[in-house]
Length: 228
Image (cartoon, rainbow, N blue to C red; front, side):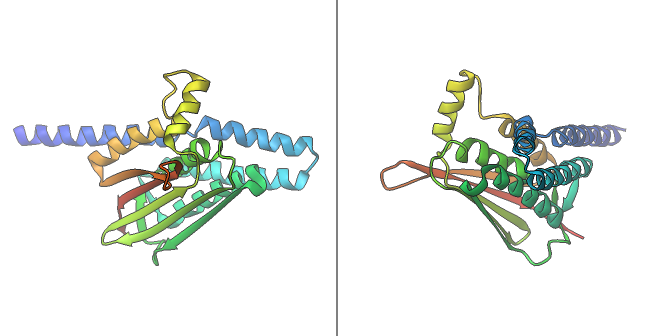
């Protein structure tokens, strides 16, 4: 009876964690939605129907993808890559010629590798919103995927203004309690849950030049994968 009670407790805690995780994943960053709608409005105002239609189509696909993935505990790496590319294409259209991104995938079996859903995109949103948005230099973002043993290694590298300067701007604009933003806070909660039911790790590096000036941020995600 004692063993049954312990097993029931473990199962209940696991189910609660998965339920909370699903709830967090179903939330889209309101900042991103606001910018997307503003971009569509701008294209309509400029009477650029082609760009407005193209942007709206991509935004619709991404929204549908996020809603579908939020209901799943795990998705294929290929599904995650498609969502990431859609998101970055939307941001490139918004920034026009001032933003370049590159996705490198050194993984051969993207359709048979499964990872926790909705984990990577929020880090890309943080890189764009907090690192690149306020940079006066040409904005660049790279995302590299590779496999080490049973782990997927995802490296997100930007040449933005860095976390310290981004936090200073956010605090000045929104008050001292502004924190690091929606995506970061939600991802911290998500990682806490994922670490209790799966093996997911994150390392954030602040890049500096020879004068110790910030030249961007690098995020390294280590995700234990399962195969079909």
